[in-house]
Length: 391
Image 1 (tube, rainbow, N blue to C red):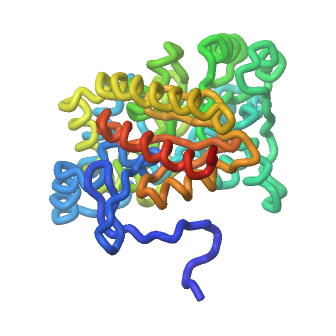
Image 2 (cartoon, rainbow, N blue to C red):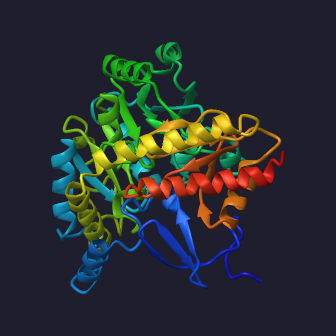
């Protein structure tokens, strides 16, 4: 009997080591990692500079709580503020960052004399996390079923439906929360027109615009923040996943206009911004500048989509055209074949990919990946498809 709860459908492989874009099992077998811990290990596994920063910090100061100022969280906050023009709250995960965003939006309205402005509007296809507030803003029924009653004050509007926004965002809306690229539902990018209209309506009706960049932020689209790609500036941005390159840390960034909505005692986190994950995040930000990651991601994205498009054309009975942005992509699989079966067959070829809603393969490789490694993954997928679809 396993000592763990059975809430994960884990693959039958145990990894003991990582290096760059590869993971190694207990037999030393390398696996090319094209999912990066679900868009987490942006600089790959065991990056020496991040490992050094973590080890040095762990030997100096691990925890003090947020009763005091401590480093390197202070420096990390300054760096994120400098790069975003926003103020920072640290937590431990993406769902906690979204919980903080929901609380800030409602408290901001309350403090400004609009207690009736409490509804949070999200999109169909959304995924914002598994804690109760974030779950209430998540449209996927399979995540919600059996956990009711969920918190009140949430409703949904169709993703990328510009005309529906006018009804959805009204005078009782505290916030509109949206993923610039929906990850879990199948890697579906928002349109610029949709996000621009959301910005205009939030301004007009006193609501805050929240971008959930937990999966699509931190350089995955070719800019540090996803909002930079779309040219639409939100009031709140939530980050996690890649921020600590594998160490648990989340952040809510809030504009100077709405940040005062939370005051001392309104919200907190025992471990949020603890020194060790903050040190990893600082090293990550420094390295992404040294490596010129934005240019690298733009170039590798062209290779990734060229390879996926070629596969879709070669196997039209299996795949629809790929979708996504940057180094976040989906390759939809045609039924009756299941994406999970294709992923399992790829794993047997020592290549790791994810799956997403809509029966799709999901690709979110380390941002440091090379063209040759992307082609290696595509070649393995081609081999798998030839075996799964014999002539």
